[in-house]
Image 1: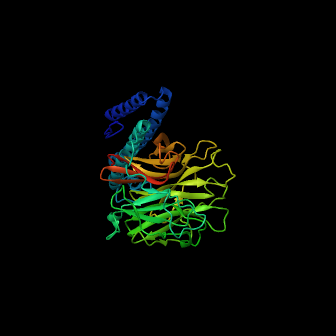
Image 2: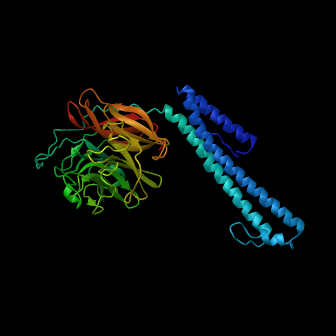
Image 3: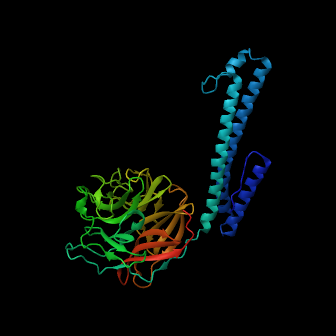
Length: 448
């Protein structure tokens, strides 16, 4: 739906445009297959948002009229009138040189406030109205599996492997090293690990589709790198910090001396190879009891930066025998940061599993043409959800990438997206006739 330019919601023209906007919104709901009751409910939400803006504008205009009337009365009585002295004092206690100067200043302030109302409240209402409509007809591009798959198979096993550990690599993160490093080993760095092995391995490649070569059989990061971690390190996510010129690597591990709580740590690097833990403690952890919805696990985090804000999603769990949030056993939480180092967790989960189902997990998030797209592991493949702000209005858009028919026909894990030159790449772990890491891609118009 096109955006309407509404200069003033109080004029007939402004009201007519808003009526047209919501009428068009209603028609879009009908055409997209929604029933009339649901369409009216959602359109009413947008109408309510616009109504708030109109009320604010009317309030501002009323205040302006009152001040103007007061000044007019003062002028009629002359500058020596006692009212002149009273009117020279603003409602906030500020004393002006004269009532006329107060009028000029406060009038300008009102005009500025009204302008901001038009820029924010009205446009926000339009944006939400458009989001309500477009999210119900949201189409994710069709991802095609690369002919180079699998990129990495389960046959990988370092000669110094730990007895009993699994080296079936399923969790991965991709970094376009050439963008950030002066002399990278190759153009692309891929960080990979299994779930219960003691390390993160580095693979490099000249193209996004490989071929990928292992940098060293010795992992670049291990559980022992962290003072607080034990048992394993897994689920890498990588990001570049433009301010401090550092590569950030997020991983999760069980925490020592706890009842199997698993939280997320952060390591930093100048070269993408040698990493140092940022803190002696996890940087993403729950402060609640293990029976709380995220009390046992804040793990499998995926981070991105949009504007000046870092944000992310993670898999949340409580005690193994506890029923979590309204009979849900696992959920997806969100986190926010100003710098990528210090984080705050949202109080409640954003995405809930179906009741008594533990299928959702290992989420990812990225910004897609004005929406945040969250993708989670489901029994049938990867399921998508969209939200305008990672805080509200989450909508299920269904399976966006199904289990395959051969090497990845059993389960998919840990999607990780990367965009370059008009192509969206999705790296993921898999099990099926084989196990390992693969990539799928789609040509897209990726605006954000």
